[in-house]
Length: 233
Ligand code: CA
Image (tube, rainbow, N blue to C red; front, side, top):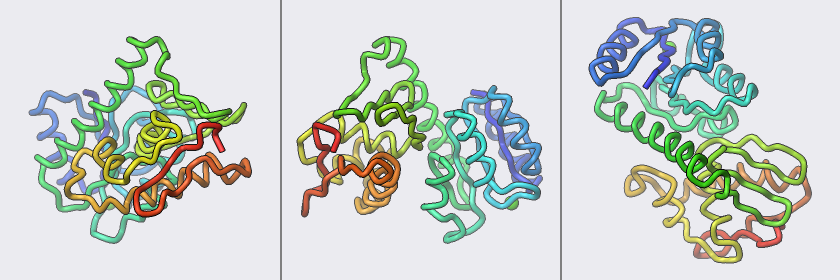
């Protein structure tokens, strides 16, 4: 993979370069936010490792800007300490995952592989199905392979995780889907995560696909999870 590392701690950036190169990846490094954004915008990377606190532009800002360009490259945020990363802000910025420093290289490599696997699976599915994998509920349309979502004629930007959660629900319209089932399908290490995290993603999905349109497509099924209204709400 071609990986962009945006990290101002030069020692850490260098050890990431060494580790990732040893794993067979092609690595570029940027030590500040502006350079990081410029490189990310070349669109030539398979994944971006983005430090949160950077000189110039923050990781959040960089991520928001590349997502605003319509660039779906997987982004893994690196954060200095527990609590520094704001899950909601990360979601808004379009990050796919995050990792708190200090982290082990083995964990980082596993997370990167998972992100890449999802991206590759999406591309392969698009190639194999020719876009036939599109999911629809009324005027709500989701193309998981192309990572696109729209309501009527409005394009909606979703993060990889939001897209995964929505796909889970849209694959089974009218059926109650348990939070744990969503967790198992969308997260790589579901056993280490509180199923209630799904609520955070459903809440951010509702703000994007329902609230602006005065609709209610994702219904809460108390004690279980969620159900997609077959007519799109
Ligand atoms: Ca930093």
